[in-house]
Length: 223
Image (cartoon, rainbow, N blue to C red; front, side):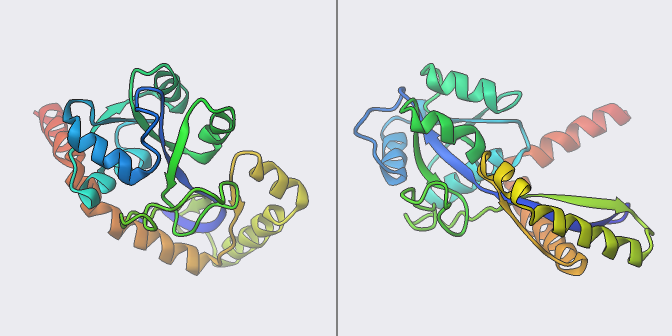
């Protein structure tokens, strides 16, 4: 918020909570998975695409909402996380819909829920986390920013150009292939959304323990 000025969002997507062959076939829902974790605490882990990423924090939020201990296993990206999920090395994972949708249609993994406020049009039969009783709502987005002090007229012009491009049939089709929708906001609306996200994620980051670990690392580096 100090060094950049929000220009426009370009797309939005959702995150999925998925399970693989390490979880018994009788686990059909996210509620079932939580119960399975409580009955098998040593197996209650989930893969993330990176420490400190949104998938990591979705798992933290789910654990808090469900009152269950879920330990994250961090990978360097979604591909290796899904590879271990399909291989049965981890029972669950949190990944963007663009990564999990192809695997789910082939039957290799099971998508139990999405983290968005509403069901994804790409997965209409999959409930949201909030629908099944866990108040976890996360909308992921991609957007454009410009350097601070960029003239307002330039920001408005960029916003209009990005919005026009995102509305094009080619862009809509391209985004749909990775489970993304287009999203439109004015610069002021986008700035307000960014501020709201910063305020919201602060407590989640602290609850994850990542803030404390990073603070200790910084102190050691400064020493």
